Image 1 (cartoon, rainbow, N blue to C red):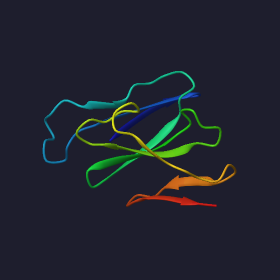
Image 2: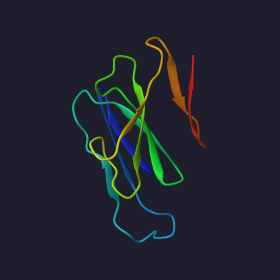
Image 3: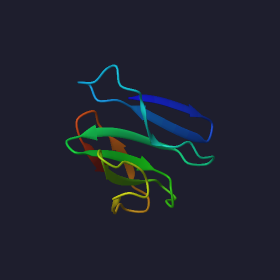
Image 4: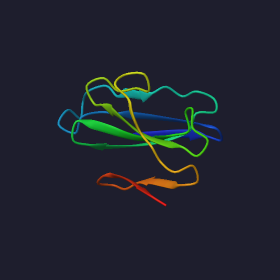
Length: 94
């Protein structure tokens, strides 16, 4: 995965590890005010996003059809909870 960001926006591109010559695919297009971090685990990307969330929210989207609008599942967190994504799995800790 390649991450590109500026002050108030983030964007990730990715390729399959077993297809290193394939063109990169965009995970979620950069949008002003939308900050996110992403990680891959199994058949999903886990995304920590400020999209419609004051203190960020943890979402997942299928690798086959990634994006904020496709197959997203939002995990509820406490309003003041700090969330993080580790390198091996998505976790939420307060």
